[in-house]
Length: 383
Image 1 (cartoon, rainbow, N blue to C red):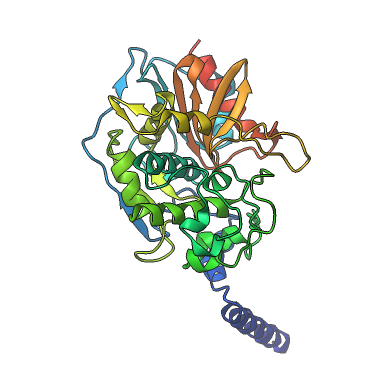
Image 2: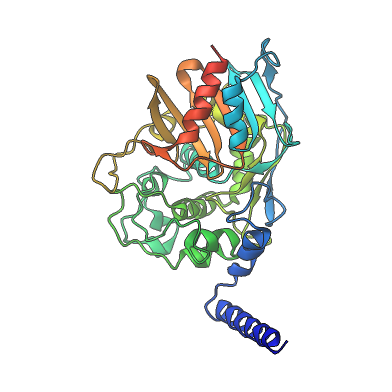
């Protein structure tokens, strides 16, 4: 019994020291991190995070429901493809071709109205908003200095295009397991502005492609300053209303009435995510409205002139859109850490949306293995 109470005493002391250290070092985000992950038996958060954080609503305008193709409801994945979809805990899979939904399927009780976290697909949405701001003249061009909007970056040579192409040279680190890393602090903390000011441009901007969520967070601050509106308000006005989204989206904030987590956490459903893909498939045009300037759209899906760390040319990234040549076709897509995808295949006039809980972290030419699995499954279904 004495040993038991000694054990409890040490647990108590360690707990007090842990809590004290967290407060002294300004790492109180660790409490929410642990509550949301380890204490729930997980190494990371789920896709159902809308209620975990404060959010700001991205309002809709007049909904424009998708048309359904004559093949809708008549196509079925092969057993092999179904096994892969189940293996990675797919929640939604949607294919639109020639502007109509051809196939739509849901798992685990999810449906066409179910809202889940986009994770890093939000970065691609931020890129579109940047194009909107350039069209409006709120941002002069991608060559404009970030320091024109955020004084802490004056005289660093950092430009808007460096944030879009993940080549800022800022000393962020992309760590998903480290609970004290930037991504954990940004996701679970409550002061993104103060957090970002702790990082500096310490390498030449525009040289190396290094995927860092902090770059997109800086870009969201730029958009807020440039437009005078919250990122959610601007997204509603310039995109969500115009494409006829059927459901409001919700963007996670760092605190009540705070800043959007611009690097992630745009919550929506498969049908409305597919409209983002359709907008890009239509080269930034919706109906008679040019939402994204063509020159910006074209640059978004063109390889940025940066280098990988091994010195080879960037072969995978544009303005926050992933780019790949596959099966003889030019494909571009948005992606999130749990296997969220908006895949555009222009040669087939096709948009593929996959939402789920897992992805395969094995990379093939810089792209997750499951990207190829879902692309192949969609192409096979359309034969």
